[in-house]
Amino acid sequence: MDIRQIRYALAVARERSFTGAAQRLHISQSSVSEQVAVLEDEIGFRLFHRTGRGVETTERGRSFLAEADRVAQDFFGLSDTARRLNGASYETFTLGMGSGMSGLVVPNALQHFGEIFPNVQLRIVTAPTRRIYNQLHSDQLDAGIAIELPADELPTGLQAVPIANIEMVLIGHPDHHLLDDDAPIDLGRLIDEPLITNELTIGYGQIVTSMFADIGAYPNIRAVADNVDTLREMVAAGMGVAIIPRSALLQAGISAPLGVRAITPERRIGFCIVRRRQAMSRSRESYFSFLSDALSNAVPVTA
Image (cartoon, rainbow, N blue to C red; front, side):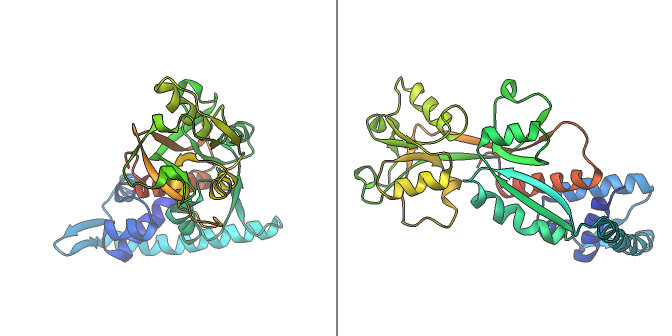
């Protein structure tokens, strides 16, 4: 058994509901049910039984969880003691992600990470997709949220869990002539438009060039930015239009409003959470599982 299973079971007991526990933990109900079932198999008896009013703790479950609660508190206290003796305040978990992903990741996962793991310091490294994969491969990151690569292009030693499949949309200055209609715009109308993109060999830029290649054309790329924040500011300044994932519009901090329009034929971009294949410590496995579950549950892969 591990501390994550204990925390999930304690949440079910407090909420008297697997659904309520999942909402409290900000993960999927299936993840809670699966981990509690694993724990029950290991200890050899049921912790809960279902009633018409929800979930009730069994007699043995009440005794077990009362002790488990004390053990969990002792565990975190012991962890604190070890970190103090080592001169560190927190265990750290380093997560890399692209500059355009905070609107997707922060409200759906990072906002609640500290509630579930109060003794862990989460370090965020913002980097382009290629650098995230390179830093994972060189052991500089514990996990990364990046654009999904085809299986045959995934660097050796890494594994990826899909978390979202997001629509690509056109953005431009609100007064741009292509944004005077709410109907989806045909990609062919953008062939001669000055286009701003990023990461031509991997990332949004690669997706954009492949979109035009599918219609036998090449985009009129006027500028290449190394991050989405700069790209959006250039678009807001009227320097050109851009094609980006709709999720990249969720972030604050743009100095001017942007016009948005769907594109036909529709194209989506896959995002994933990536890690090294080699085994992590139990605690890091718990952090990775939480982030993976929280993001997959919040943003369905087909949405």
